[in-house]
Length: 219
Image (cartoon, rainbow, N blue to C red; front, side, top):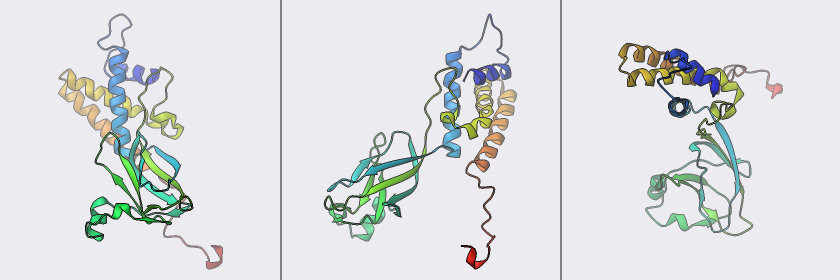
């Protein structure tokens, strides 16, 4: 965090040790704004949540850092995603949420409460013999940088090479504030170009070639 602030000050020409235009706290707020923008645009942080279903329970709270679900398994079996609208349509708007069974057939996300979203399991476990272990891989938001030693992007080391994005973003925002349109445009373009590179590289599998196949007995 301290290094990001230092680099940002170089870009906005605010390196004086006796009189600075912006405090560290002000720059920190902008840097955290930039970090949230980067993560929202690249989905670079993936996490796994594991929980056990409960008999008679359809809804389970999603983690507060949830952005989007990648994959869900129930006892290691892939569970497809559905939507409330699709389930209403398939079931003729009946009370399908009250249906119980022993094997989950799908999951859905309930966005009706933006600050407390839930994941729903359909059908819900009918008894204690029907409960399963749910493993959810999801894209996550990061916590704000606070301390001078905090690392960007939740400390994910393979993402540290993209910490310079936060200095470009900070310079872009500062020059907008100061009415320096040309400088704001230049740093905005640097930020956009670097963000595009990061987005293309995150999750890349360099040794994966979908067109390559080996001998039949190599499986």
